[in-house]
Image 1 (cartoon, one colour):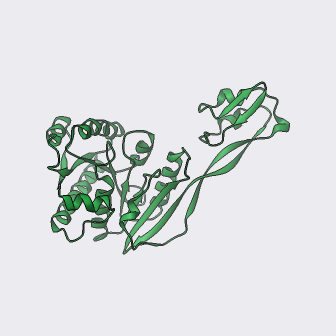
Image 2: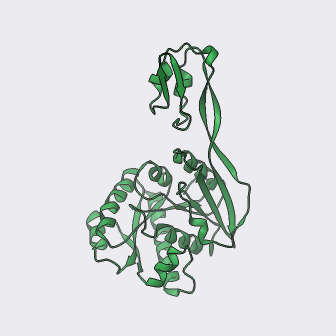
Image 3: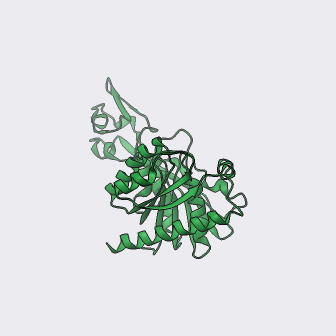
Amino acid sequence: MNEAGTTVIAVASGKGGTGKTTVAAHLAIAGARTMPTVLVDLDVEAPDATGYFKDARPSGAAEEVSVLVPRLLEARCTGCGLCARTCRFGAILAIGGVMTIDQKACKGCGACVAACPTAALEETPMTVGATSISDAGGLSLLEGRMVVGDIRSTVVIEATKKRAAASYASLSVRDCPPGVSCPATHAIEGADYIVLVAEPTEFSIHDLKAAIGLANGRGIPAGVVINKDGFGDADIAGFCEREGIPVIGRIAFKRERAASGAAASLWRGDPAITEEIDTILARALAGARRGTLR
């Protein structure tokens, strides 16, 4: 639980296509029935969680996300090349005493500006994305979205997390990017519990192992939801037992459920799903409480 009293449940997966976003949306709906809840879409390169809520309406202003990038003041530049040697991301080139800055490759760390001996670099804001908030019948929806073609996903993820923390919801459900790369690491950071969504295939087991390693490495308690249970024959439960991670839910495969998820439609009128999602949420919240007490 964070300083605002919010329990943060991150929904993640080792690979795409497991049904992570569908599970996150339904967990948020379940939470909203009993407590103020926000569904936070941190898959900022391709956010789609809000697509499940066709009747959602904006409930606040969109906020730009920017990063400070260097701009060259040519009259002050001596061509020493120290800025290029300082940049760890290859965003500055020094050729024949001429400096060239690729602002789209810049991570905004400010090291080059601090290193320049003649103050020939100044920082200027560059928009890299935006956050937007809407309401879906009492459930808050918060989305982070990158500018098309930008590469600074972690900046947008952190800005979206910061705005979510200011919502003062009792429950925050994060739809995280798939995989275990830098964006996924930023998305789960600060969570109280991670729900890892997997499907019964060998590919999913391979990537689930990496996701479990990420959760363990960050010291965040986690449990696995087996989605599309019965669709494949890989022994996800046996794998989880060997890895020492609990299976906190199973969602049986049904063709109509798969079609509904593919169309970004909620599982309406399916009492079995409602009951299973409620169980998963209860187990995740219990796991979060136990983790907080450690």
